[in-house]
Image 1 (cartoon, rainbow, N blue to C red):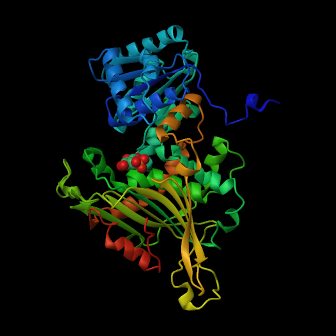
Image 2 (cartoon, rainbow, N blue to C red):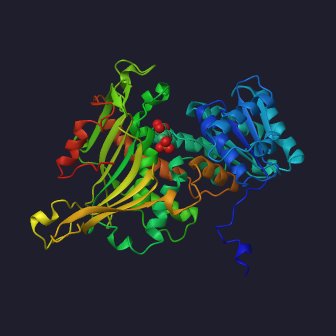
Image 3 (cartoon, rainbow, N blue to C red):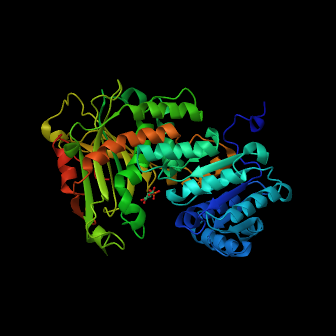
Length: 504
Ligand code: BG6
């Protein structure tokens, strides 16, 4: 068989069927900085079908042209790939806008009629995805409107109808369940795409490649050889203008419940029987269910809040000084926790997770720290500069993988020191990595659910976070200066167990 014609060949570019992408909340940051530029990048790479339509919906008195010019400027400013006006020109004719608020029946009737019209005019065969780039409080109303107008009804529309829901997916387990029920009432299960944009990052997908395409790591990937695992998500930025969202949310709900637990699941899950979405999810869910919390939450977790300080040579205000943050807020901007995984592979191995804003620099990584060799046939002085082996998956920036091990220092004496073997995406491949949203939007349009957590995973992740949130009720966060690696208590938490955080 000609491999180029093999439908199983996943290297072939995947191009969706003609369809429309309806974006609710087009004026927000996500749409302007990620979605619209991502759509341009896909068009630029030739991955969108002819007749692909972007339909914006927002409370604005705009014409199609007004929206097109916002989309143009946003795409041009934030696109990953080089700007080509002729690519935009092809998209521009297919950019439409419907104005109205979420309680405006007439506006949704108009949206529905517009989609019906596109069936003929653009040959979209009724295919449309609805992207909820809106606050969760608005989800119920928009879902109700989609149900009322029949826009979510695959059969009535004669094509597929999908919904893309941005995180946060709920605030705790009960609200996540309520939201799942609500979405399930309107869309069929397979048509719901929950976004966790970390899963769209190349380096995060590479965790599966590293583990399951190689034979080298698997024998070491267990409590016999692994001492501990550290997952770090550090950001140098503060909360910017997001106080309204962030102050009710905090670091644990904002990024641990989703991004960090997904990273943990990918690093620790068993090998799926195939790369089918359902198989991967089943394995992730199993390991999420095996997560154990520290017996003493006060000793096994640390919450922190940044004070004013300096980050990368710039003065940074404290969290309580950020616009619209209440003066007595106890919301955490940093969190560290020690989790366990109760299964044969991982029992006894601590998993240290930390995430924080206004840390010295932006870095996300997973560090697998191996046990030291059981016996070192060297003098103590020979190995003074040797630490334990580490495999570090650098999610961002400097995407890649680093393996740290000991090597002899050249010379006539025996001295063993740490060295690093460094794989960098930027050097090893000529093709630049797509942005997470670029990849995920394409997957939605193709209908590939592999990189989207399902309802059970989301609910299970809340089962991990909820008891911690309850235990933290009424407690005050520790303080750290902007530009420090979190509160001292986080260092002490590891020191009590004879470990320290890796210098990320
Ligand atoms: C989002 C969080 O999910 O991820 C933000 O809500 C955070 O608080 C962002 O800044 C970080 O994403 P990335 O891709 O820059 O690591």
